[in-house]
Length: 271
Image 1 (cartoon, one colour):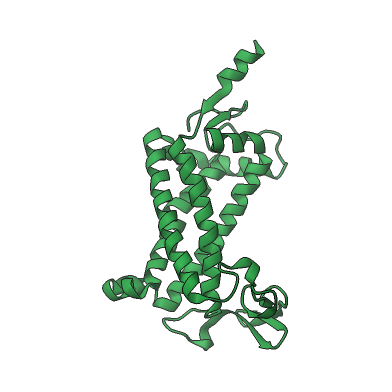
Image 2 (spheres, helix red, strand yellow; image 1 turned 90 degrees about the vertical axis):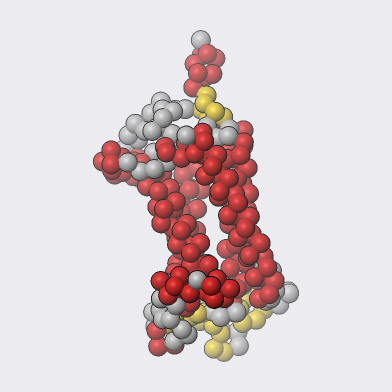
């Protein structure tokens, strides 16, 4: 009897292509972030302007004196020695580095290699993203990830459940309302922003599609939006990992490795 109930509650949630795309995409994004920080180190500042303008500097990470790292955000400076501005140089020593060697690819300062890693894994991430979209659309799970008007009233109850202010989450389908809100934002706002600003930063694309660069306010502004998009994506990834850890880690990991997911009482297969 119990065995039969368990079997009935198992659903095949993720197709093989979806799972492969997820893991390849996760690796690619990690490399993109790390190599992107390597590229940032070559010009460790962000300006809200169409060209490099110190008067409109939003962020700068530098070392004004040997052994002292300083990070300045909107004109307010903080000593960040050992983490930002001055830290590991990737060769066993220390030096003036916006981001330390243990965070960048390659670890040592090399803009050319950083660009190669970044561009190659941008293609890997793009292909993985397209494969994931196609697989999810064919299986029908893509539609289940989109936030619907009926989900809006469930956002706070779901948040209350995560904050341990509510014993049970509101009834939901494959994805809960907060997950839908996050995925909708990433799919239709954040991902396009990161891709388009990345293209606007390319001199080749700028030469043949200059209006795209103008749309974002110039290459320096595009660089700012690209960096902000990266930070938002990191935030999304951290929340995603938090949800996996707190909402049945073994069950979640099994579903993304084998495809099989065990439904809980408050969950259903559809939206």
